[in-house]
Each structure stands twice: as C-alpha cells, then as structure tokens.
Image (cartoon, rainbow, N blue to C red; front, top):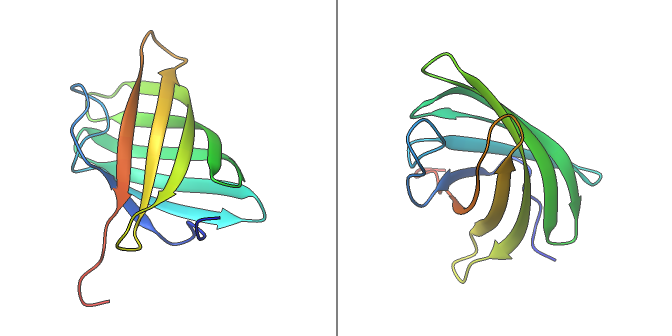
Length: 116
C-alpha cells in the first residue's frame, strides 16, 4: 500500500476549466486512522476543504470550495493513490459536482519542497 498522505502537498498537473482547481492550486493533505482531509487554495480558488476516507489505495471524499468570483461549489470525488517511480505520490481522480452540473477526471501529484 502506498505511504501515508499525511503532510503531503499536491498540485494538479494541468489546468481544469475556468473557475476551478488549476495548476496554481495547492492541496495540503492529512491522514489519520482511515480518515483523510485537506485544505486547498490558489489560482481561482480562495479556499477549499475536502474530507473523506481512505481504504488501501482508494480515497472517497467530498469537497467544498469558494472561488475568487465569490461563488461556492461542492462535489464528490473518488481517487486512486499511485506511487510514482521517483517515490512521489499521484492521485488519479474522478469527480462530479453536486452543487452544479458537471464531472470529469484530474490528476494531482506531490510537490517536492526544495531545501527540505
């Protein structure tokens, strides 16, 4: 099983549609006893939170966020945790909005903090 997500910072590998999570968004993950949660911000996102569960390499969580346009949105996401050859973590995500129409897939990868 891939290692714990606790304390990892992840970022999308590509921009999504306007007003959503993008390459400048940063997610700070926490994990404890099967629970996962994260705070995120950056790009078009003022503040976002997600909370859910982890079973093996599968995450199942809901997210809620505030955009720079003042709008809020929420949805559901299921992610697969993948360990990359260089030891970093990738999340392969399948998500759907619950507050508005739309769904899709995305990939976020661990950001290595230089000098750490």
